[in-house]
Length: 120
Image 1 (cartoon, rainbow, N blue to C red):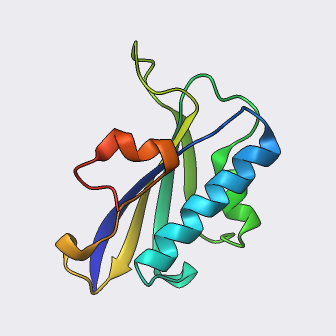
Image 2 (image 1 turned 90 degrees about the vertical axis):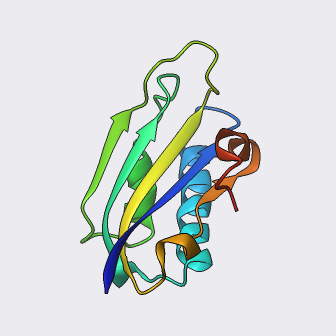
């Protein structure tokens, strides 16, 4: 079984804890579903949030999904002039038999514009 990295991002409409939880849950669920993964396949997840998001930790949504034994960490994304606002990004390390080229990176909604080269 190989270790693979799965990327993803979602843009929030507003900085509210409930909305962040919904959108991050949607993103994590899509990452798992599109890659045929279960919680047992997760090694760790890194979350970043743009500096304009203050309402909650993105990792709280993962805990809400029952990912209680997966190491999670949150960090602030770099503040780059002109960058898309209100974005949560994910870098998940997983165990998977899929070849690297078959990993589905998930960029939902407006966040698809961030990585048109790999967005599914």
